[in-house]
Image (cartoon, rainbow, N blue to C red; front, side):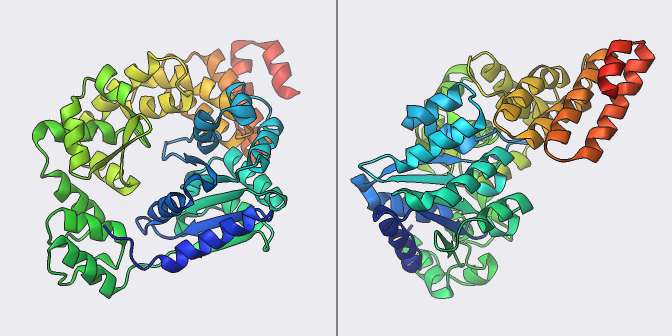
Amino acid sequence: MRLLEREAAVAAVEDALAEARAGRGRVIVVGGEAGIGKTRLVNEVVRRVGGDAVVLAGSCDPLLTPRALGPFRDMARTSGGAMGAALAEDAPREDVMEAALAELAAGPVPRLMVVEDAHWADEATIDLLAVLGRRIGATTGALVVTVRLDEVGPALGAALAAVPPDVVRHVALAPLSAAAVDALATDAGHPAGDLHARTRGNPFFVTEVLAAGGGVPSTVRGAVLARAARLAPSAREALDLVSVVPGRAELWLLTGALGAREDDLDACVAAGMLELGDGGVSFRHEIARSGIEAEMTPLRAAALHRRVLDALAARPGVPPARLVHHARRAGDHDAVLRHAPAAARAAAAAGAHGVAADHLRAALASGGSLDPAARADLLQAVAVEDYTRGESGEALVALGEALAIRRSLGDRRGEGVGER
């Protein structure tokens, strides 16, 4: 559908990019509610930039516990270079930060980095955004960050607030006016009626209602489900499978490991439910993905997560955070116990100590085949991560429990280490 009432916002981003090209690097924060059109706006700007800039894009994922530096790992898949090497080698975070800054400063073509959905960012990503924001002004690069303004946590809020005022540009997107909604309804061949009042001008809600054939469901999720109901049963099966994979579902995963039919995926793309790109498919918006996933029964959702987990676990190089997400959704406690410590180590290496602690706590909560000595080891690891991120109180609670287990086992050496 047409991009309406966004001319001023596009112009603001383009002006900031022009300032960056002139040697005054910029951070551009594109904010608004879910479905307001942040990604659509960024895509339009990228289209207009064309070959005048090298575009590196990545997204923060709605995983139960996010990937450390997830959006920058996405960028590294296409950019390679020093940043890709640093991330591939799990280099110290200072090296990753220097490599990312060097990427922004590289020439002669200006660099445009896009970090989508920063409200889901892990702490290592937030730290890197803060560093880039403070130092980008001396480069010809630009950093575009999209965020749901009503979901900005304290850490991200502090990082964005720390960017020098002369460097940052804020672009806040408002809902569409009644006239714009009427115009879109006319384009789709449907009467507008009370469409604007019911959708409150949210572009994603408007487009989903119109794509579903008119009528105005009371929620965005209702509009998404109405649209999905028009798919053939086999295509809807494929859609359900994609919905349990946050972000982009790779084609090798869907058609190879999981047996989805290409015709069914094509039908979902043709219906506008999915988008094809970068070797995989994804929903047009996280609202749509989560709406489809939430409609499934718990047993069906767990079974699909189990299939995805088995397929991902059989392939080398899959980030352990993805495995932990699907293991937790599948209710596979032993798989959580297998993969969570590796995910925690990767997060800690990237400086995401809160994420590391969350993974370790997931392992503790899973139970699985965890003996007392292994439980004490996990608790002590949790204490280290909590202490490192400044949560001394939580660290002492975990360490106290670990010490009690060591004493009950007669493990004097372990007890001594814990006391130290």
